[in-house]
Amino acid sequence: MADCGFPKQKRLLTPADFRAVFSKSQFKVSCRYFLILATSNDQPGSRLGVVIAKKNVAKAVQRNRIKRHIRECFRQQKILPGLDIVVLARKDADTLDNQNLRRSLTALLSDLSTKLTKLQKLPTLAGS
Image 1 (cartoon, rainbow, N blue to C red):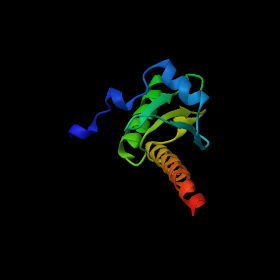
Image 2: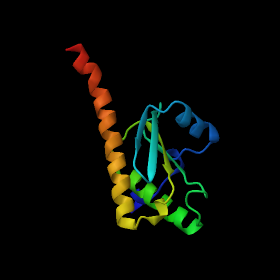
Image 3: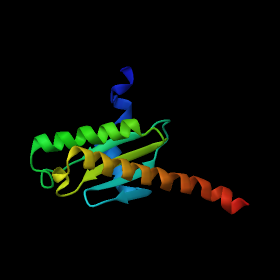
């Protein structure tokens, strides 16, 4: 149970942290409902920021539900070392039920992980 939290060192906290990801994003993955931007950081673990505009998801209850699922998927995905990640919800993300929401987020984080591993393997392939 102690591993179920979401401590401050796992979160993007300041506007400067978010600005850095928006301006220098190295990785982008998206679907109809979400966009994930990521950039490498100089810390041992990954950090997460969530942006859900009222314009895209009108009700606070739905925004909070989506945020909980995003944080939980991020917490369970342990194969993304050293990244600052921002998840942006697009219009109609609140129409997804919980199962499809989790499925979409898990697929996007998996795609991000795949892009990261491909990038890490490129220098070794070029050197051979």
